[in-house]
Length: 178
Image (cartoon, rainbow, N blue to C red; front, side, top):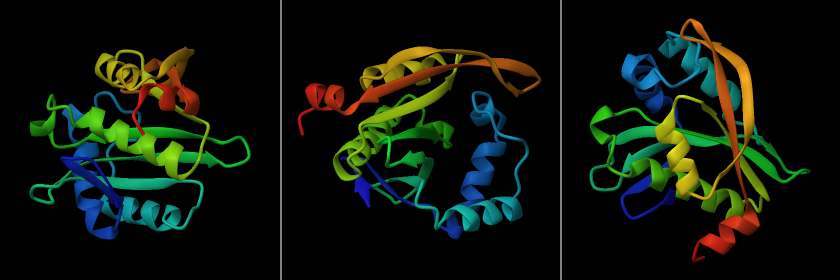
C-alpha cells in the first residue's frame, strides 16, 4: 500500500469495478478524460482481469485514510524498465472531493513510488490542453511541459490537443525532501 497523511493507494481489485464505472460514466468527471464512453462493469472487469498481471503497469484505487472510502484512481502505464520511464495517470471520481488538494497528494504518492521504489528516471503525463487544473497540479509537482500534440485524440466530438509533461528523477530529488 502507498500512502500519504490523508490518502492511500492500493492495487485495483474486482470490488472496485463499480466505482470506476460510476466515475468514468459521470459527465462531470469524464469531461476532461479521453475514454470510450460509456463503460460497463462487464467490460471493466474484463479489462481489469487482462491488465492485473501485466508488469508494465500499476493501476491503483485511491482511498481516504479516515474512512476507507474510494475517491479516485491513478497509476503508471507503459512502465519501461530499459528506458527507465513510465506514463502516469490519475483522476478523482468523487466530485465532493474536488478542490481539497487530493490530486496533489495522489501525484506526490505516485511520483515517490515511481522514483524511489521502481527506480525510474522519468515520469510523463498526457493532459488535455483545456484541463488547466491538471496542468497546474503537474506543474506544482515539478513537471515541465515538453510540448503539445496537436489534435492528438478524438474525444467528446472534437479533436483535442494534448500537452506532454514530464519530471525527471533528479528534478524530483532536488525539489523534495526524501
